[in-house]
Image (tube, rainbow, N blue to C red):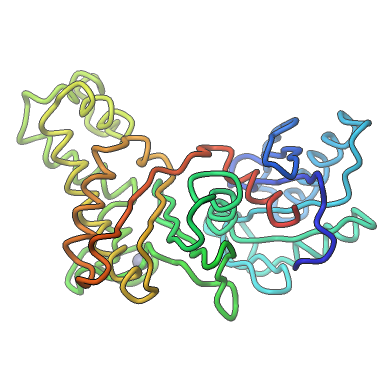
Length: 319
Ligand SMILES: [Zn+2]
């Protein structure tokens, strides 16, 4: 993977609804960006067509920049040959040779494909909160809970690219069903849907909470953004919900940090925007659950690259 690093590259963040494409410099500057609908409902060929279109648009709009490299962050498992396997939000993708398809369309380009959470981990390692941390566990906490492991500034993929699935660490064998088929996974407690559900139950017992007003009394609309807003304004119930979620995530993180001998965790994704209301809870929980030698050095940091992490990390595969 280390042959001829490029000085500029296209980074593609492939999602269930949008293809985001950016032109990225070797220092991580986002020079230009565009986005297109991913057309996921029309199957793999249509989606690959949209990736091609977005990339060509980037090349056309930047005639003075020589671009010969492209990285793609895709949902699902990405194997060592650039096959994308069973992404949950892309229809008909049991196993799609995405790297090979794009190499056919972009002759002479260096093309690499990686799992999207792994790509975001690479972005933080190269350009974000992980620049000064050679070894860390990256967690993307949003709709689901994904992750990536960075060792010595490099992504640890495992033998087949599946490493870092922090969301499916079991924290209670009698816990709720998870959509992976197992039960009691940390994602089944703190993934967005489950978190919103548990928040609803708690809010019903706390009519005084300001969250009720933020969602116009429609608790089906409760999402982390509102909890975060209410927590910042001092709402005790919202703070309580976020704190409990952070504590639960910390239990899973501590297991991984024990196994991998890691001290640093970097947390991105939508819920991490709640800042210290969750990060401090994660940290205290990790400290409480790791082995004593690790405790004094535990750091839980907020990711720095937000929604651009996918594009930056995808480009980072070839930069
Ligand atoms: Zn699971």
